[in-house]
Image (cartoon, rainbow, N blue to C red; front, side):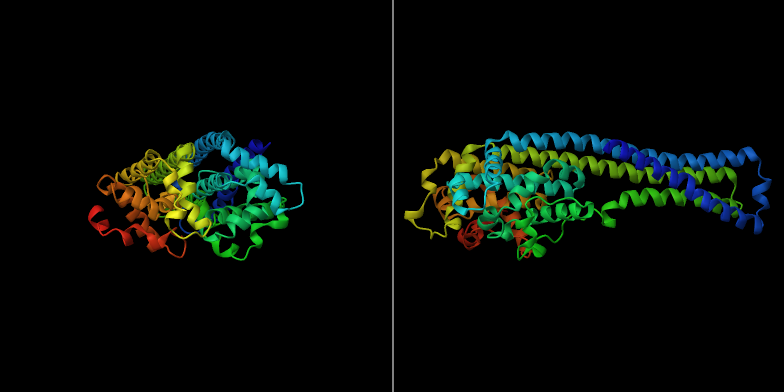
Length: 433
């Protein structure tokens, strides 16, 4: 039904732009030409006129064909991507268990003790972070124009709101550390806006994240699918078609040679086509980049040893523990796991330096995963300071993220910033050269 509706809408658009609009424009333009010395138009051989008109019409039709093909390719790739995303969410034991526990508790009256029992360990609460991180990815893909909000709503709406509108999760994560969950707030807002526009029910609305104190602040910059800037390509296609059609009559009015008219219209079509090709390449690039981030994130969360490193590195913050030998949980982790964790981020820096990745895209997904570890005094003393010559890429990546953070302090947060690597290592700036 949805495919039929979309196809019908596209046919209506073509009919309006190629038939109705030209008809409304053609009559007054033709009268204007005839009333203002337009005999030159009537003196042209009828077949030449028809040929020139068909050339102009074909150019416009070609523009819409390009647009149709771009949309078709994008929908196919996006659909495949959605299937992969759906499989991914339920393929990992960590995210699957979170969803199952939340479903088991959804019909019960809220009791914090029940949730604390369900998520009693640090590893259980880490799984909540991973579940939320999945939807941070989804928000990024929506913002990049890779996924449509309507598709995300159909597939992931309940699975998002069951955690975003959960009192317990809000209390221990989303509201308590709201500065770290900007992408979740944006995701909530775009889905809430969409559901309100379509008259759809918002799951678990009673405890909606939109009721939180800082909802408006942290949801700024959300993807507004109704905004003109998010529909620029469609506007470009429509305006280009109308411009091409009008150009045909304007050139005739000024007695431009008929052969040159066809050439001019053809040139316009070539320029418009070049823009369309650029848009198509950019779309494909966004899809490929999104797939890469998706696989990169999967690679990270699939490593159990990374989970252990992160959980132990973050305990001092979550439990408000001072750094001392008594609270040193890093010593429980074998050094090989720490090396592997840091090596993962070294590879990210290599990709950044090769221009394969962009720091602004990497930051939202991996900043806390890096800062929790490299800004942790235990990790610094246990491994980084002793092996700094072998971890130049870690220092360089830290510096890239540090500079990005400093430029965007109003939007992002740095974990353990009082122990930030550049503050505690005198060799920091030597190593990043």
